Length: 427
Image 1 (cartoon, helix red, strand yellow):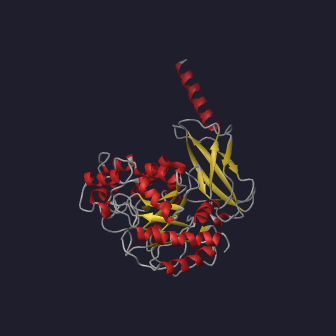
Image 2 (image 1 turned 60 degrees about the horizontal axis):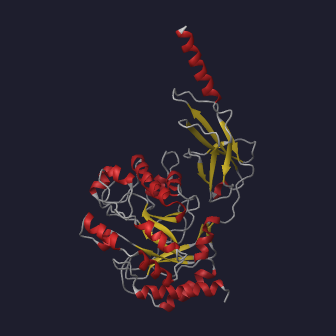
Image 3 (image 1 turned 30 degrees about the horizontal axis):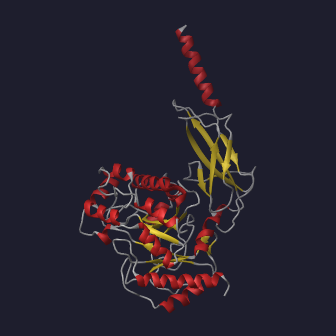
């Protein structure tokens, strides 16, 4: 009798495992438009059930399907190279015994189309923004955790946001941190990986949360600046992340998985309040190439989806360094645009299909510094050409530890805003 019960139980387990897929009710969240995120929704999702997920592409909805490597999540970033193609997501439930159940799939009803990049429309309409390198290396270079937290706690978000409004900024790019390993926002994933208590490297104050509120009141959107790799000037952090100290290099799968968990936590925390990311240090010569290797489990797609986890419409770009305005990744929503001069102008709004033209430079003597590099008339004449073709500009500005932006930088940014308004009016 006991053996019969065991047999019936095992038979039922095997039968159930193979029929899990039959009654799935799948749908898509999103539309097949290039540069957006398409998500598979399972209305009858079983808690605790894991899935193998495979995305495939074909010229026809009933044609021959080719698997897309490196994409194994419910979400997929629709690349412009998918245009004219149908996509299929196949989900294979896996029971605890390791037996795979019957797969279920869903196919787009229409092929992927290119419609510019709808996520960048607000960006283009914003025209001009400002950036602040809010870094320990800038404001508390020789201090430790206490000195850094004092700086973060003393930053006046209302003063800074009002200065941004006076400068005419349509958006603010704000540095979470850079290479020293200190960040102006709590992050439990980071603390856990490094093995430090909250407040030692990530600030106790959630500065971005306070800044979002101040900027939102003034109709200004916010983006984050963050290196695409772990910080390279903190030996403890590099040891724990198993990354190279003192130099940007390609990430291992361990390092990449850790860094994505840190990015995902910030993305999920700030959700739709966060409008974009500017990832630094994704240089040619091994880094961008390794990240773009879709044979690896953690790749440019998983990095991008981590950044977009809290807001599928969030913008992403990967910086290739100072160069001709271009795109080095099919996952770019806009050009990184790092430049020391103001000579490049767009031929059109788009660097290539779906990639908004964007240039990022500094008003001071160097990045984050005070001083005045350009005559205002130079900026106005150049900006007029950029805005006439639909380009977007961001200026790195200098601020003191209270958050007060240098008056000269406010004045110059405001002059460029007036040019944008003139061009927008068609004058």
